[in-house]
Image 1 (cartoon, rainbow, N blue to C red):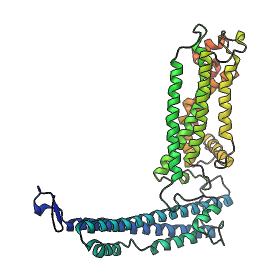
Image 2 (image 1 turned 45 degrees about the vertical axis):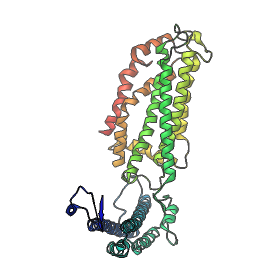
Image 3 (image 1 turned 90 degrees about the vertical axis):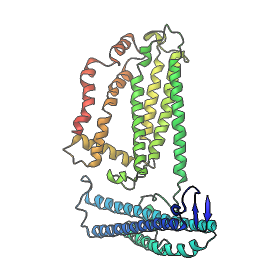
Image 4 (image 1 turned 180 degrees about the vertical axis):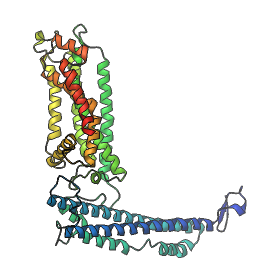
Length: 445
């Protein structure tokens, strides 16, 4: 490289084509102006949102917006309360936008200073900090925090305009907590250590689960003890129960994944699906429940595999079953797993309260009973989910037939499993299974 005053260029490039200091400063100025324009547009957009929210609050106070129903199944009082919570939720999202934009402006303000300071140090000059920096800061108004303070003041007024927070001198965050809406996405920082930690734990769990599934595969591949009494058909008879539980686990994992993708893509799925704004169910809730039940599934299924293939526990009533390896106690593995899954799903939670679980049941009822009940967009999504689980629903009759059949499994039941893949009757195969598989599509139509 060749250096000459404020000009730096490669010795193989002609001097007249070199990238000069003036070119570099011009590029910095263009980028800074672009950042300033972005901040100005962001502030203008936030101001417009605040004006719209102020109109909505005035409409709610006068009762003019309640006729525009969101939930046809709610009373007018419930609808008014619901709309107020929606407005407070929107105010919280605007507050989050103000906070992010303020941090963006401050970060770029500091970055511009450091860049020009480095420039002056490299070229032994004072032009960057003494001339360029003040001019660009004044042109872009990156140092004018009063604009953000005015937005914060307007946000506080709107937060306290709700009937739930009237006559309370508190910040928007406190107003949201009073209304039961929780905190906004960021509080004074763009870093969320808890979220990062949960992602690390989730990654570790998924990796461990994959290793354990591979271990179960190895157990299935290893030769069994006493091959003469080992029956592959008898071994597979409880599989429909394990598959039903596994399908439920996949639903939980998919719900958490979809919610996580929506959050990372800034898609307000809670608003789109008309979920109660006070609902604090996050993707981490679904992941935690799914992880717990997946651990139980791996443990209990692995115990069943080891017990049947290598006869760990003594047989019970083997003389009444298919052969000497048959035992009554094998049914306890799928039964215990099913009971733990039901308990884990219905167990009380301070996050996913019973009213939210009942809301899902009511949505399924409205979807199934349409057009006798009005349905909304969320109900249509529930209908789509129901059609997606049409295939797993076919395992439910097979699981019920196994649980209600004789234990230990008799010769006739094992032969039925070999012929049909389960121990159900011809009536179940000809009527109940097609009915369960077709009803979701009938409900969704």
